[in-house]
Structure formats: structure tokens, C-alpha cells
Length: 308
Image (cartoon, rainbow, N blue to C red):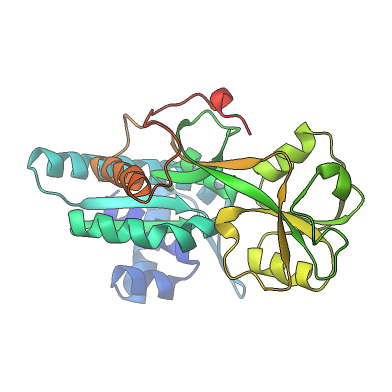
């Protein structure tokens, strides 16, 4: 069984289409179909279901995919190690990122990294906290941006304290206050960001035993802005997200400051690829240059040291 068949199978799963996989790998659709069929024959069972709705993994395909991803990841590590020994700066970085990071930080980080290592390709995967945890665990990404503390046994590097603010709709009774408390909003209809189990906002409310009147749970920040603007409730969001907020929405600080802690996490910083290690260092360097880095560069910081 060749690695090329594994790469083709993984591309079909990621794109959900033989045609899209062919475009991605610059192959013919018939070549993609033949490679998958040959792989299924070699293994002795179907890997994919093909119907009108598209292509999906079989149960056996799901079991096999995990191992194929690990094999391809190890092959990439081997390739990059050979490159590093030969002192050629090349390779691929697979980065998991959050929407706020992608908007505010990633363009600057990528620009700096590309100027330093133009031969290293960076592939980004945009997701929520739960997806980030899953991608790190199964090797889809080398490392990713997360909120700390994380519920997984990752090695983490804290980067930034991102201050939390309350968003109040137009005409709200508290809109003229400079600061507010949780006690003042405990009976308000609340729009909860739906970002996953490691969300600092949800954790903060639980820690302070605040049973806010959650009316909606929304993932997309722009939708939260629109709903607050329409008077459907209040919300709490971190500062990094508060870009191009409608003027009619009042952004208010809390009397006692609260934060989400942004960081990056990997299964092991020691075992990530040379290219990924360089990119992690570039992230920290860029944040320090911009004055955003709030923590010392300590890899593997214990999760229980992070206090929200």
C-alpha cells in the first residue's frame, strides 16, 4: 500500500468529493477513483459510501482514517527532519485557528513568517474550541490556538489575556454606566457564545454561580452583534472580537476585570515538526513585537496556573 493512495483517500474525505480531491491534488477524477477502489480492494472492505448526498466514510473507513492520518503525519515529520538536516528551510505547517485570531493576528504573523521562511507552506484550519481539541488529538493539525485552561492533556503556551466586555443593546438602562457588575445583569436575556466546552465565558459564569437567562446560543460573532443591536439580549465577548461593532451597541467594562486566556497547544512541543516549531516561535515573536504577549515564553505551562 503506497503513501500516495493514503494521501488521495485523505483528500477525498477532507473535500467530500472525488472531483474536488482531483482538483486539490492536480489529478484526474478517474485516477482518484481508481486509487480509492484499489485501496479498498487491498484492505478487503469498503472505505467510502457513495450516494446522492455525496461521499461519506463507512464505519471501517472511520477506523482506518485515524491510522492513515498518523502515517501521513509521521511521513511529513520524516521529510522535514531530512530537510532540517540538510539545512533547507521548507515544509508544511498545519495550524488550527480561531476566527478572532484569524482576523486580528494571523495576517501579520503569516506576513512575518513568509518573509523569514518563504519555502514553508502554512495550512490553516478554522474552528471552535472543541474542534481544536479534536484536531490536535487526532493529528489533523500540528498545533492550534485555544483558550486556557484546556480540558485536554496538551502542552500549552499562554499568549494573551483577552479582556471580556458586556455588550448592551440600544437604549439599555445600564448603557450610561462606566462599569457594571454581574449582579446587575443576572436577570437579563443573554446571548451565549457557542464556542465549545473550553470557553472561558461559560467557565466564568459557572465559577461565579451566575445563572444568566440564556435565550440563544450563537457561534458567529457578527450574528451576536446583530442580535444585540436588535434588542434580543445582552452578551459577553472578548476584546479581540470587538471590531466593527455597530455604534448603537454599548460596550461596557466589568467592575472586576475578567479575561479569556489565549494560547497555543500541541500534543508535544518536543515532537512537532521543525517547520511547526519555527511557526510557534514566530507567533510569540510577532506578539511581543506588537506588545500583545502577556506571558513569559514557557513551553508546557501547567493548565492549573492559568487563572481567569
